[in-house]
Length: 103
Image (cartoon, rainbow, N blue to C red; front, side, top):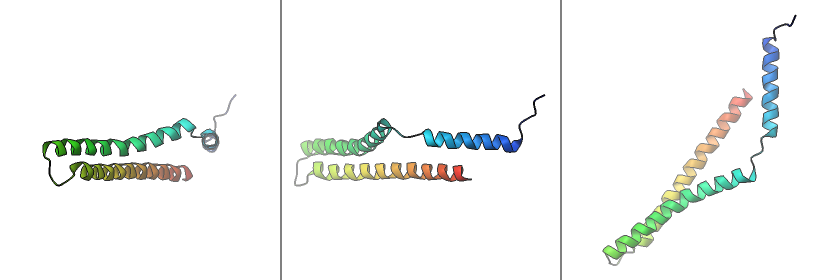
């Protein structure tokens, strides 16, 4: 006759599985490269779009101002802000997950 596992033993088993899973999860090289690529594209796309729009405006409305340079800097600023916000959000999610694991 088998006895039912107690609540304490169930919690202990789950905790051991969680610890083992945490030890075995190493983000690989591909994961890191994917993150770098994602951040790079989030900066590059607005920068290139700003430059393209600036070239179009300079071609259509020639004058003393360089729309290309202004919109390139604007796109770069937006892209960097976008990447910074995304990294901050991911960092917060990782910290929240670690706090949940410690409880």
